[in-house]
Image (cartoon, rainbow, N blue to C red; front, side, top):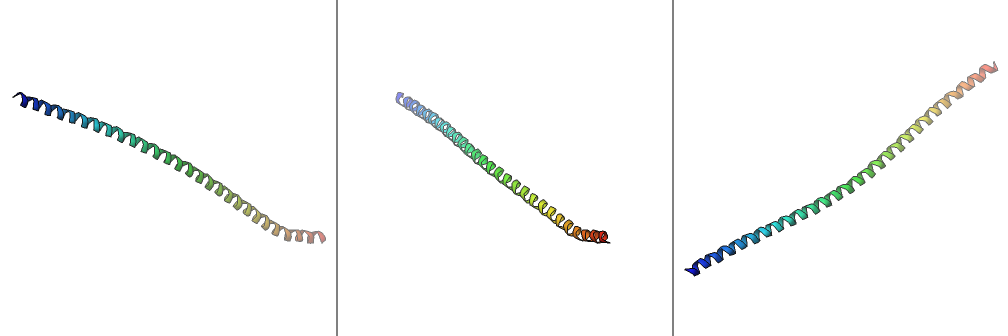
Length: 102
């Protein structure tokens, strides 16, 4: 009878050891998973930061190009006004000269 009780005790202690080992294993897996997730989050944050820096460079370049285009448009508009005024002033000058001559 002692042998049957001893066998039960041995099997209970083995199953308790198995459970504690599996719990430890699960905890280690969870820690490993948490560490892996933290590394992934860190990598994704770095990628997001790089993307934000690239986006800011593109925005700055677009802003600069828009300012250059606006400056060119304004210059051309001023040249066009000057050209129109210059063409109009020539006949006016001729008319003034004709009046002065009379």
